[in-house]
Image 1 (cartoon, one colour):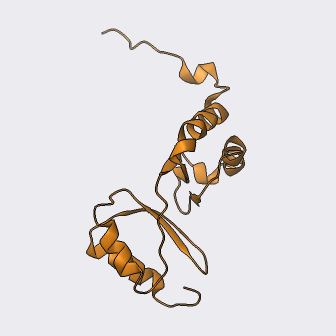
Image 2 (cartoon, rainbow, N blue to C red):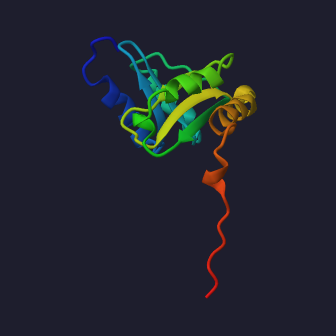
Amino acid sequence: MLMAHGFLRRIFEVFDRFETAVDMVSTSEVSVSLTIDNTTNLDAILTELRQFSAADIEHGQAIVCLVGENIRYTPGVARRVFDALDGINVRMISQGASLLNLSVVVSEAALPRAVASLHDAFFGDLDPAAFERHEAPHA
């Protein structure tokens, strides 16, 4: 795809024709990686994509989303994510313009460990006051 005007448009037109939503996208000068949830038309999509590009599939991947208010403007979040995922191969990363989430793709086999590590990193030392239970006033 290097210097190929309209390449992304062509890719997304294929997914549009087969009414297949793309969940995540990562691009560089020479490649496009994307995820889909609905694989119903995957063989036909691949046939069309392979008419103008090299296309491969990696099965057994999972998207993990970290959601938080103003995550985009919170310094150090990406560092904490990657520190927590040390030893786990991250296949894709997406944050972009989102104020609320940061997403990563890991293998399904690593998913339980990734989620547990992220949970420990972000919720291991909670401020008890933030989770105090307040009784509703009785009328």
